[in-house]
Image 1 (cartoon, protein in one colour):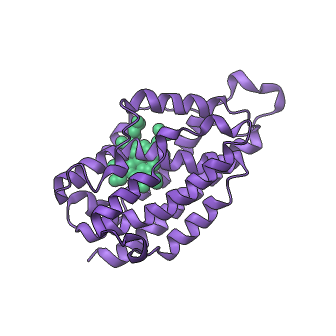
Image 2 (cartoon, protein in one colour):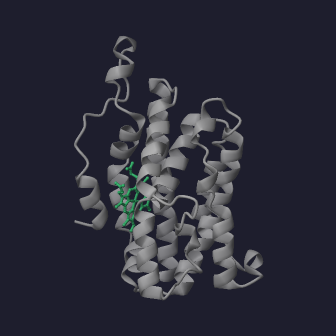
Length: 238
Ligand code: HEM
């Protein structure tokens, strides 16, 4: 069992209810944060066991592989944070936008360190990443679509991302520079922040169809990550 599976197995099993008759609404509804976590569990485990992810975590790749991942993250977060700026103007969606989560400046600092001052013209975006970013770009006007992508990335970065940072430091000799993407300087304690984020997810005023759409889109978000890791693996895993 992987680190992640152990941590996640500690969570209590729940009965998932996506669609319910209107009369049964509210108090008995499964929280959206639970629907998202349980609804993407198989996809999460699949993403973790991708060759690229496993080999990177085990220290069997090189800095070029990590740099390539950072380049993909630049495209993903540029799209996600443009969508965040849009969703901030939505009366429901605005509660999900936290400035302290903003990642693009950190990724750019990492790329400058890893590639040099011309990083913007030297990096390339893989086809799977282009498709992922294009989908995210469509979500800034839909809370149920946006929430799926924001959840998948930000809660992931605040969870497994913290383990990934330690592995990158250990195996590839990074210090403070190069992996700042994983360090949320404005979130000193990750656990209470994640709790707040989940509370915000659960407080969203979404009907059952919108909640079901969010879970479906979160699965698609994981699939985009899987496809991106497959392309990274084709380049970097021997
Ligand atoms: C080696 C790779 C990975 C490891 C070791 C890992 C590890 C973890 C761990 C330990 C948790 C549970 C944290 C907690 O309960 O507070 C977690 C949660 C999460 N991970 Fe991963 N993860 C990995 C890859 C990914 C990927 C590729 C994604 C998606 C892009 C992702 C998205 C998430 C999300 C959204 C959560 C939050 C689940 C929830 O509580 O709702 N993870 N991860």
